[in-house]
Structure formats: structure tokens, C-alpha cells
Length: 463
Ligand code: NAD
Image (cartoon, rainbow, N blue to C red; front, side, top):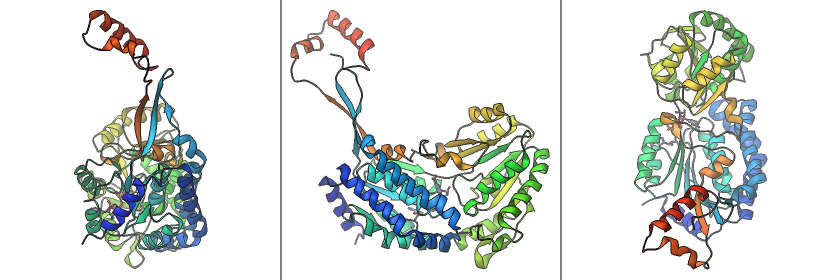
């Protein structure tokens, strides 16, 4: 017995009926999402606190407000995004943005509201039916999404399904028209292989190790504040967090007291009691991170408490490239400082590894920042700050290579969930002029055609 069969059939039929296509329907669903966020603010804050010990501040900025702002942006721009885009000046060629059909969104646990709702906004705005599969690991939020969210949406067109790896694998055996997956590269490969069986296009929002280069020419306290905030935000369980710092041994010595100072200022003398520091999502991840504390030498922090899944904001030094902390994505409040002798060595270090989701460079010299940008590749880049680039809806968010494929946020989400259909409407008259293209072919006609091709390919059709 396939538990998804009936739901998927119902959603496919709803899409085929054309119900999701009118702008009014899409706007009504987006408004429903907005109401869901406003009516259930406390419930959402409680769920995030239960799952991740997420503070109200972090929950608001990184989950609730950002989802609400995506809803508002889509509502403001829906009509403009849906409009056909004219492709030629002279005749009627245009790009029509069509919904794909039935799309599947699979979400992770670290920003369990944001990473479910923000893609959902794009999928609804583009006119699709949607199956949402939240993470089974962020249990409190999974419950809210399964029990409360559907009340705010047309349940004939949108469904929340539950399950872990086995159920998701079973779900992926079905044909979808697009799969949007956020999670680890390893599971991303499983998702892509399953989608390939149906030739279903995928967006893969994956993770990896994000390098952070710190130049000698910098103010160490400013850099430490920014790096520490972004590394320890959500207890380091952020796909775009700086994963490790590359700097000279001299800068390392200047950064250490500055990091110590930033950590004490942010989280107090006993970070375990701080309401501002998140905790680790599960026992399994706690154990994994505890293991990483044994790499290199602990310079700051290093304490842990299994009963609260607490890991102190930690800085490691003297780590070897071969140690696990430099081999796997850390995804926790641990920051290794890796020594390099020069900018060239840092760039080489970065380029010898998989392309990251985000890359950071700190320097008072814009030339240094520009060199890191020019000589490396990553999903996104931010000079002299942490992951602020991903807060802008006017920038695409996504990875490259091992960190993923595809992009979303703002209009990029709408485009990701739309097929860009190439359309041309021609006149049934003026058949005489088409004689030029029909056999019997002649050199004279060919010459006329070639001139037309050169000059007019972007302004009108050839003939
Ligand atoms: P994960 O890959 O383990 O799980 C993600 C989703 O896939 C969950 O819904 C889970 O139920 C499902 N899943 C897990 N194993 C599966 C399997 N074998 N078959 C089918 N489905 C399966 O990721 P996670 O632990 O939830 O999240 C952490 C990872 O996600 C990190 O690598 C992080 O960098 C990445 N991430 C990326 C982004 C981004 O925007 N690029 C955002 C957040 C997290």
C-alpha cells in the first residue's frame, strides 16, 4: 500500500483542473501563508525554541520575518512576474511563465520554517500544486507544519507529508514535475538519482565547508565580532556559516583575544545559560560535534553537556587538514583557525576543495577582497561580513558544484518554479513571403535569408 498515492492523485487532478493558475488564487494562498505566520507567531517561536533552543531574536530575523518578507514581496510583484516577457520588437514572440505542475519541496531541520516556507512562496506564486516534506528531525516544527499550516491553504492543492529517509525515498519514486531539495550533498545525490528516473528537473540547495579568509590588514575586533556572530548564530547550524578561518599566524594571535572578547560579550561568562545561544538539534549531531572537539587544540571554549545538547562556542587552532574537522562540514559552534603564509596560499587552499556555498574575505584593502572574489568560485560571496548577501531578495541564493544547483529567493524563486515557455504567434496571412524558405532552394534566396539572420535574429523572426 502506497501512503502517498491518493494525495498525489488528488493534487495532480487539482493542477490539471487549472485551479492554481489564476493570479487571484495564487494571491489568496500567499495571503493565507502571511496569516499563518501572523496568527501562529508564538507557536512558531515555541517550536523553534523546543527544537533548537532558538532565541526569539534569531527566530524572528532568520525564520519568521524573512518568510513574511518573501510573502509580501511575492504579493507585491505577482502580476509583474506572471506577465509574458516580450522577446522581439517587431513580431509577437514572448516568454510565458508556466507552472511546472506538481512540485515536491524537501526541507532540512536547521531553519525548519524558513527553508520550507520560502521555497513554498515561489512555488505558489508560480502557480504549482505542492507537496511539502518537512524534516522529521525538527519535530516540534514538523508538527506545526503538518497540523496548522494546511488550515491556511487550499488543501486540494497543497499537502504536507511526513517521514524520514525511508518514506522520502518512497515519495521520490513518484513522478513530480520539479523537486526542490535542501539538505546535505550526500542526500542531494540520492534525490537527483531518483528524479532522473522521471527526467524531473531538480533544484539542489546543499552544504559544504565555507572558507573565510582574514587578511593581515584588518581590525581584528571588527572581524571577530562579525565572524563570531555568523559562526555561532543558530549554534553554527547554518549552511552559509563561515566554516573555518584562513589567516596568517600573526593575525591568528590578534584574532584569538578578539574572538574571546566577542564570545564573552555575546553569550556572557557561562554561555550554557545564555538565552541567546542555540543548542544542538539531536543526540546524533551532538555526538558528532563532540568528536570534532578532539581535533587540533582548543583555544577557546570546548565544553559540552550532553543532557542539554550544549556545545560551547569554540575556537580550535593547530588543526591538520587530514583531521575530521577539516574534512566534513562542521555544522556546529566550532571554528578552526587555519594558518596560511599568504593570500596566494589561501586561494590555493580554497581552490583545492569542493566549491563552497558561501565564501568570505575580510580586509581593509578592497584589492584583496576583489582578488579572492576573482580567483575563486562559490555559490555566493560576501566581503567584510558574514552571510548578509543571502538576506537580499535581489540576489540569487544557491550553490555551485558540490554546494548545489539552481537558485531562489524573491523573483528567482518564481523563475525556479516556472517553465519559461518560448512562444511565437504568427500571422496566417502573407504566405507569399515564405516562398523564400521553401524548396526548390536557390542561392539568391539563401543570401537574402543569411542577411536577415545576421540583422534581425533578436528583433523579429527571419521571414
Ligand atoms: P539531510 O540531507 O540529512 O536531510 C534533508 C531532508 O532529506 C530531510 O527532510 C530528510 O528527511 C531527507 N532525507 C534524509 N536522508 C534521506 C534519504 N536517504 N533519502 C531521501 N531523503 C532523505 O540534511 P539535514 O541534516 O536535514 O540538513 C543539514 C544539511 O543541509 C547540511 O549539509 C547543510 O549545509 C544543508 N543545508 C543547506 C542549505 C542551503 O540552503 N543550501 C540550507 C540548510 C541546510
